[in-house]
Length: 523
Image: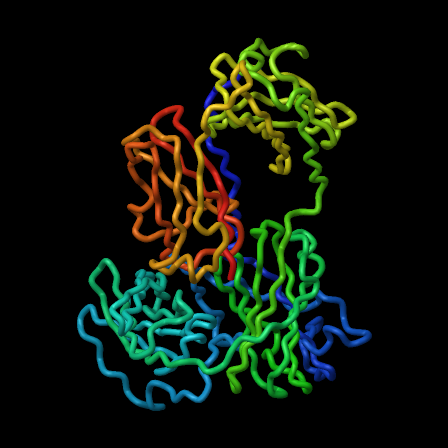
């Protein structure tokens, strides 16, 4: 195999289906269901009652339509009002208009916005959202909703399309859980010149979210199509109406419904079981938020969605000489005794493998494709005339599952010495989402080994190669100093997903140094 055919960037498919999260929701079942109950409907109290119907017998509801855009998570158009719990109302809040009052006529290009309440708690605005009705649009016209806070900050809440009668009812969510207190102006505009606004007062929420349970706490995403995750919360009033929302790893929100209204049980607990109608959901941490309408009591229950439970053996990479010299690596490849010989063992029999070599500059070179034998083994050699001293890494990808294994190789000069290597340093390799959004904190990233004055770019992406939103965007490009050092200050402008993010610093010149690290973001 020959080195240094520059490989394209590998991009794992970003599971776009996660945004809509086509969930077949299993509604909780009553202990004593009335005779008029829909056939096959289950209820919350049956989740752990002996003789309860099997999960999955509940009614599958229509999937909510999805917003386009939104600053950090997508809001969702709520279900029709005929669905129980479709429009949750903030507790102890009077309606915005007197019943029976005649609305004022609209002027040309004027829109009327009506929120479900004139006052909303900051936590409720972030977690559950606020339903807003827009009137005055021509049928099928689009509009954008923007929140103007009392602190001068404006955020786009999302976009929606009017019904044929020119009305639009949407649920919008504030991207920041600690939105500024006071009067917020919600404005609706579109490209045709239609505009209108309303105001909502954001007040402090005095409660806190307790921790509930989810069983199982880890589940295979394909198994979730057949066996539900059951979330449990306590501390509610008996019979209290409950609103439930599912947050995916990117903090997109999906309101949860049932065939019957969601209410707490006689002992003040609440149980919700859900399944997925698709096996293509994004793996990661999911969160079910349960919110009591009367008490304002909130409970969070987390579970982790893992990848498919298929045969995912990726094997082991072993070099015959894990430390070698430049002359040895520059030999001729193609035979078992030329270049540096390596072996791959423990993969699935006859697995098709893509093989890459990450060289001393951090550049991925595609070596080719090979197939394991009947015992899951593969053996060959690697060589390249342009090899330099440094640290190399061989990566072997399973073409079916996209899992990979790796093996490290150290290449020295012929006299055994190792030249100075480029370095990449993160001031804080692990921090919370709020710290990452704080301009006075963030993460300071320093890279060395670049050409003085060279343009160097910073990439921060999740496991699906989706970039992190940062502020300002210009912080992602810098010039190296006279000593070849480049410095970045990373600050996120939207709440990033928790988990491991890949950090990559790369010079713009061909064959330039590419360095990689990871950043762990916590809640």
